[in-house]
Length: 431
Image (cartoon, rainbow, N blue to C red):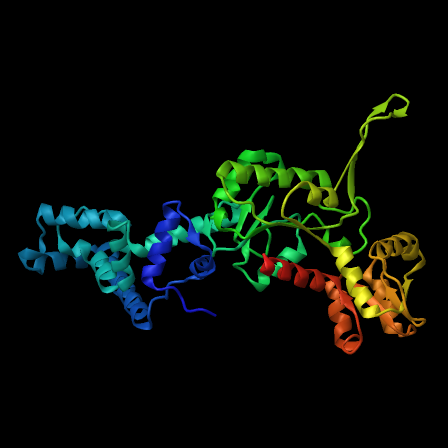
């Protein structure tokens, strides 16, 4: 854990926040978490003592007026304050309570004791008199930063080469990357993600104005790349045609908006990495009352987007997983094992996608791939240990954590989120 921020750093960050300027991303958490030390034991003792003494004098003045009048009568005349001194003291008491409006010093003693003898009282008066006290500035800026973190309006400076992460609802790949490296980049999303305060609020319906606004919150010109996550975490491997967080045609619009923004700013084109599935499509056709008619039908996929724009890299999670399977198979025949429902849903697509990679077995022995509608069925196959040369493909962190402790520590497996995360990190480092 890093050292707490020093006074000069606290003042610098607080001033930037209160003035609406950008702050360094690596200072956000240390500043937000900073707490001033509580009063020392001596200070607390003095304050309690002052409160007790003050209470005693207040009791004498209010409950025993005869004692009050006696003391006022026997005390020297200089205990009678001039109007000017009385008004000065009443001004101070008005800052922290109510004016006394009496000339005799006896009436002012309780306040004098609590605020002169008690360190906390002195500090309270001082801050009331000096509203720009640096600690108050810090506390005000912390509250402002907290609000900005909830609303996605924070303004940050990231180190050159950071990533602009456009995420959907609870994307776990982006989450894992950001937890590993909090200053990796800014998360851009429609709502706050629980794992980071370094984010900007942007919804696709906001258009170019909203896009420009959210990029202006950070030093976007220094970013290394844009990373888009249209894939759904639960469907990283063999997703169905509609198992996406953002449809391909919306990704097409997003990429177009990025390139238009760069042209307007006069920036060089930055690389765009899209974590998704090349086989998912958005299709547009023309129809009459009787059905589709001959016309120019349009299909949009991540593949067509990569061909349409410059410097686009597609990280296809299914393709990356199959390449890992092929590497482990090492020429063996590849079989697919699942529940009967899982075979019906995935088997045909599994072999279709495998054929696109032109895998040709060169050996007679086999490798059985285990993948199912849920990882619970795959877990059963691993625990039963009835399959030799069995390679489970797992998506669930909970299932994986349970199996790695007792059944997978010396056996091959593919934990897809970890695989995609590593490939994405390598791509980002290459950029």
